[in-house]
Length: 228
Image (cartoon, rainbow, N blue to C red; front, side, top):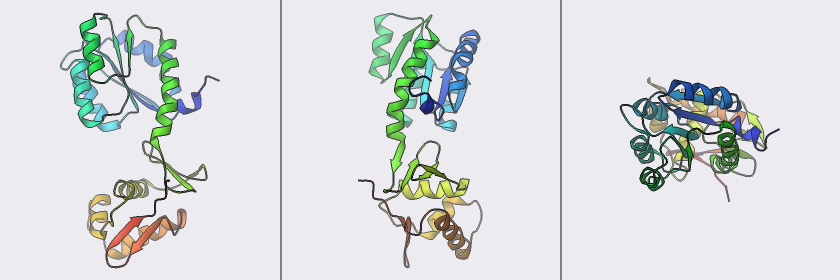
């Protein structure tokens, strides 16, 4: 088995390329290794899909219609400063390379490239990403901030989509007490009673731990984080 191959299976890749043959080549060569391998035909579509799927890694050409790879990368950097971005380009001139480096790319491959070389780089990158995306909540629980999966002692906890949203909301505001109304507004698109919210949180605690979410009387809820 390729080193770090098990980590690749959790990663979402966004590949932005207007040349159909290259898109097919890379997807056929690499697609099966990843959780998902999403393709876009130009920078505008790439940016739209980035916002929708929130990939772990972006791979992009430079010269594309509507929005080129460098301009797309600048816009992505405004949304996410840390996501690795890999440039594939037929252009080897220093000016474009320096521009790409200046806006924060992780790697630059010159066409024609070897898909195996790209996969080797992604395999090395996967280990670094894995360390950054998994949040240790306390000594028992960890949370994958990308897949939104919760683990108790490395075993997957079966929680619903709304429960994942609830946990994400708590972690995003880990130092704040969240008022019941804020939780309702974020998790439901309808009027929700206090009783329904209490029942929802009770079920979440049964699946996880009574100590994971604290109820501050008269104020709301806060997550008990001890990730030292």
